[in-house]
Image 1 (cartoon, each protein chain N blue to C red):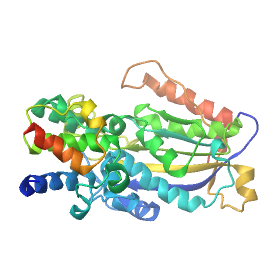
Image 2: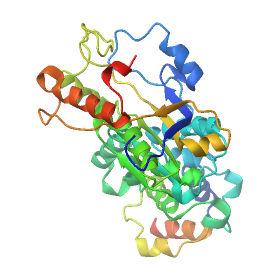
Image 3: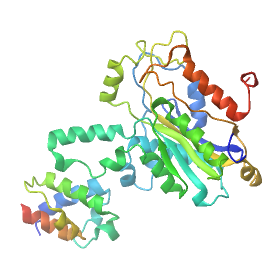
Length: 80
Length: 282
């Protein structure tokens, strides 16, 4: 895992979800561990798309499958 | 009040305004020097966090909803514990516009960054009924939850309609009032261009030398309760709503009918509803 990329991911999560950076680990589940509902995840993904300058938006179908920080991070990395 | 004969008591109220947060500070603020030389006034250094469980929840609420929840907190604290079934506790709330700051911010984001950057929280934050929905959810009020949206008259209309819910026997208690936070740059430009803002920058309704209004912001919430139930639980009765009236002069979108005929008719409706005559009003 690229730590520099993950640090930028963590910063987005802290800003949008208002959680502590220490909570944002790959195994953290959005709903159970970070108290983030589906709209929170949409907002986080928008922030990630902007932070990483993704030219291609992450489609809703892919988002629906995402339950953990690690999964979301992998999707972002795959679009870079 | 016409209905099934239930009297309507006020057992709690709360207020948030630029001149003071909470009814004591607000009253002292009203007695203060007043406002001059400005076209809008905001609550200084507003901090929503004391009224929310988390910073995230606060950020999901437009400022208009934050005000409503803050005023509701003071009102419910004063009212104490009501012996009312949740399904018979209503929320009849009011706003002139709703979450206009959020809408304006998101319009700018869409224009500058595109549709993909528009917040998924835009709709629940801008909708006029967001404040009433928030009060209902926070206090578990499962009676009618409706929002009255009638410009400057919205809050008064809501209180009258809320009281009617009790008089009619539909509700045993209702949280009512209004919230507003709409002095955005675009809105101020609109009010200014329609020549509604005070040219001297002071708001003095009913004064012979009035020359327009100053845009403010804030919220007020009242807890209305069936009079006999309030007495039975030993609540302090702060006031009673005896009657209300509502009509239209069907004249012009902003100007009142000449001679104030619509307002006079409305006041007579309220007096009739209360079973009073004009001479009964001190």
